[in-house]
Image (tube, rainbow, N blue to C red; front, side):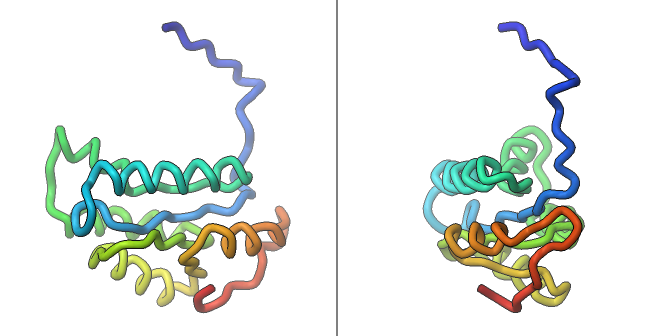
Length: 136
């Protein structure tokens, strides 16, 4: 299959809400189902005009270049603190709980369901994001 890239169709999404998706990968359920759940959530957010970040993609990187959970979390924290909000997916995950604590400490709003996040994002304007809440 050949892919053709049309530079005129590349959108500037820098002013759109950046959403970090936090959720279980290995700690509950199965990794494949958890990654699929993150992909689904990310696609919903992307379709709604947001820019999701899925640390779950690191599972593919980790297959070829394994490292500790602490190292992944150290990298993820950099991206989390650049985001405007966090979506916490259901399921037990110490890593995701740590990410939520970091988000709250950095005044990044945290949501535990997509409808509330979509409502929050609906008030987003390019020059003024909606006010942060401690948790929604």
